Structures are given as structure tokens and as C-alpha cells.
Length: 219
Length: 354
Image (cartoon, rainbow over all chains, first blue to last red; front, side):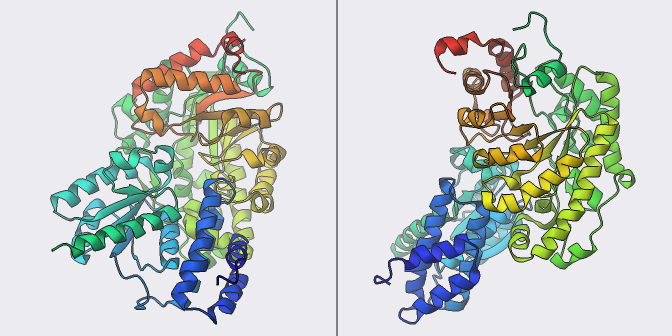
């Protein structure tokens, strides 16, 4: 891989052009020489990261971010089938949309997480009560919440309070349009972190993975 | 400029002609706030056209803005297609689960008839009642979802993007169906008394699709649809960015653009000068936190950037003020436009801002 400095760039271009065949061709050629997880870490994740940065700077569109993530998700499913021991089984992740029916943000982050080797549970649309119940029942360590509407974003405050009252030490990561227009909103609703885009969400999850592991290591 | 105050319609048409009216026109996008005015729940408020009419006139008197807003809510159109609406007590009604279960169902989709939809008829009644009371001097802004953006509610955003890239045959079919409905719905609003139509088209923004994609999709749709709407059209990107495509947007036949708070208003105005009127771009999400002093500063900054020369309507960036924005702040915004928006905006020139 180190010998193919243009691979990430070529792969990124295939994603931006929403060309799944070319993306697969590039990965297949590279996969003969390296382990699947290395492809994820050294080609797929950096390419998605570059596209995420381009979106932040207005140089790529959300449709490219979403379709690129979807292409990568499908390629990673072939490299590392769901449930594969090579996938990152921790932290135990779940992702959901709170209250409304706008799934794009959730699916975008889910694809990026899966394309990065994580295995999040997708709970679709859920209410505060349903989320608290499932966090407890399934032992979730990191819960990612996507919202499009301001009232749904504000509802996270209630979720945080109910999770706290239930004594559930889950980390709450939020994202979505209201958080882009109000940079302090995530603190107001009591989230542990806010991802302004899918790539930030992955970085946050990686960071939380370390803190969750540190927490588990304590006697 | 003029010693005699203009009517709201004169003010808007003057600025849209790229001349300076007596004052910067402003359109404050108050919709569900009408429920608060009347002491009703949001669901009860939207049940009757008479509620919307009464509340809009009360808010028009209170905020002294320049247009009446007979719009119900975005999901209303989806009700005509057979979709459910979810009401809540603290925000706009939301479209329920997507209407189209399987993408192939698009081949069987038939555009609803405006005259057969009780909810669209209720909305038209609101326009007729409002028009009868407003007369000719106060504009009424109708609204349609663009055929290119409506599929976000019809299919869900994710499946719509997949359709756009992976099923061009069904995309073309869906646009044809949606265009028929959109044109009929826009013209029905104009016939009922709407002065102009806001064409809500966030999917065309460069936040969502590239310019290259826009030129092959949303641009062509807008050009076809706007040519068939029998009145003035303003395109609203509902918080989406549009600076890189403004030259193209001007070719669709629209006369104005609603712009995002995340783009620089001065740059937007420069790109639109003489071609398109700019509407925007107060950050409606942040208004919740504004102090009165901040609200005045935001209004002044917007006027300084975009007011000189006309071609500007002060508004929010999304086309809808959140329920959580305090009434006090909306009043301060209104007062600030009346104080600082008077042409010839000498304070702007003296400060060397323009």
C-alpha cells in the first residue's frame, strides 16, 4: 500500500463519481497483497475522510458522501462479513433517529462506521422510552443519535435525563442539521460529543472506544 | 428615497426590480406561531383555514412585515398523496413514514388532483379568505415543494439519493409525475389569490448535490416547472448552500433565492446583483439564544451586506422560524428593520460597510 500512494486518491475519485465498479476494481486489485483490515484502515477510511473534509469545505455534496459511504459499506461487507471476528466488536454501538423519519444522516454515519470496520446496531426510528429500554437491554456503550429537526434535537435532553435516571453509563453522540446551525446545542442537550459529519462521528467513536476500554480495565 | 411609505407590495416589487424601495422589505417566516397567537394546539390550529387567516393578520400587525404567509406546513402536500402527518406540540408537523414502500411502486404512482384533496382545498380556502381581507396592497406568498425535493418525503432522503444515482428510469418517471402535481398546485394557489410562489428546493442546493448533478436534474426540472407557473416564483434552498449555482439558478426563471446562514451574504448578493433578489439569511436556529442587542446587530449586519441597491429581502435562512424562538426576539428584529432598514441606508455608506 505504501507503494501505491495514488490508490487512496483513485479510490476517492471513484467514490466521488459514484462508480461502484471502479471502486471495487481498485480494491480487488489491492486486496491480493494485504489483509482486509489493512485495506479498511489505509484506503477506505482515508478516502472517506478526504470526502468528508471536502464536504466541510463545500467541495463535495452530501449525495457523494452518502453514496460513497454506501459503496464502501458494501465493499467492506465483502471483505469483512458482518459478525466477522476481524470487525471491531467494541464499543457496543447503536445508532437511531429520534422521533422523526429522516434517516439520511443516520444511514450516512452507519455506512461510514461499517466501512471503517465497526458493527453498529441500527435501531431505525425510536422514541426516548424505546431508546432507554434498548440501551439497558442490549448493554449499549455508545449511542449515536441523528436528528433533522430542532424539536427532535431538543428532545435529546429528555433522553439524557432518562438514561441518567436509569443509571446507564452510555456515551451519547449526536449529529444532524440543528447541530450544524447551533454549534453549542450538543452541550445544551447533554450529549457527550457531537459529530458535525460522518467522519467526525467515527473519530469520536474511536476516541470513546479508548475511554470505554480504559473504563473496563479499571478494577 | 421616498417620503411616502410604500405598500408592502410596492416595497417588494421595487426591490425585486433591483431598485431601492423606502425600506428593506422583510418577510418573517412565522407559521405555527399562529397557534400560540390563538391559544390553540398546533394540530387544532391547522385544522381550519379560518385559524390561519386570523393568526396571520394578527402577526402581520404585530411584526409589521411585508407579506402574509398562508402556508400550512411542508407535509401538507404529502397528505394529498395519501401520507400521514405527525403533529407535535413544539414544532412543525412532520411527514410520517415515506409514501412509496418499494421503488418500483413509482411506476404506479398517480399525481393527486388538487380539487379532490380536502386538505389542499382547506389551504386554498385560507388563501381566498386572506386575499379578500388583504386586498391588493399586501402580498400573499404561496408555497410548493419542488418536484425534485418532494421525493425526500415520498421515499425518504436515503432511498431518494439511491434512486437518483441507481434508477434513472424511475427518477425520470417520478419527476414527470411530481411536475404535474407541482404545477397544478402552484397555479391553484395563484388562482385563489396568492401573489407569488415560493419554490422550496433544498435538494438542488450544493449542500446536497454537485453542480454537475444539479444541471442534469433539479435545474431542468425547475426550468420546466417555473415556465408553467402562472406567476412570480422565488426559489428557496431552505438552509442549503447555493452560491456556486446562482448563475444557473437565474436561468430557471425564478426571480429570487432564499439563502443559507452558512454562506456569506455579501458574496451571495454580489453574485445575484441585477439578476436575482436575495432573501435571507438570519440564522433561525440561533435566534433562540439571541439577546435583543444581538438581534439588532444581526439585522444591521445583514442589511449592511445586502441592502444597498435593492434586490434584497431580509428574512431567515430556512423559511420557517422555530417554535422555540421567543416572541420578544421577533419583535426586536421587526423594530430593527424598521429603524435600520430605511433607504438610502446612509449609516451603511457612512460606515463604509457597503
